[in-house]
Image (cartoon, rainbow, N blue to C red; front, side, top):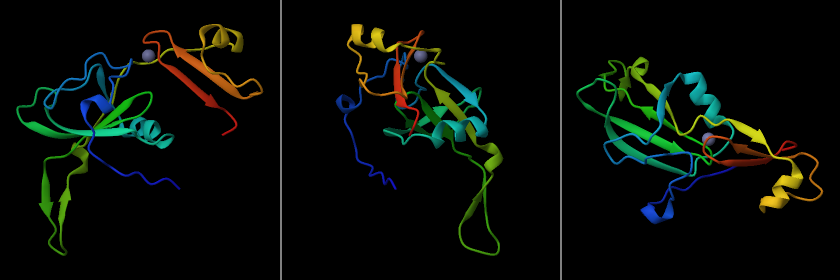
Length: 154
Ligand SMILES: [Zn+2]
């Protein structure tokens, strides 16, 4: 089981990854970004734990209002939820009920095009590659240069 503790970080704690071309600011999207559906969002968040998150107020699409956006940064991409603005109070209980059909999901960063690197190329380039790892894979994105390494037996 993993538990994640949230703590405030400074800008120097989080370096701009190679797969983001522009971090934007409190009222702008990081670039590049694109809308995705809920299935893609679930797929991207199911495997790894987020490293950082930030909360922004952004005008989404052709809207006029700043919307509440939560961004989760992973080692290879970031995803965002645009929170719904419409809600009602429940008649038969406490709390409020959001209109979840208004939720929007975004993927942020390069659309990686990975190429698997052979072990000898990793050694030549100084990329870590365990000597006895039979299920170790090192992939490099041909677009942004991001390297994703993993053990396929995990
Ligand atoms: Zn890439």
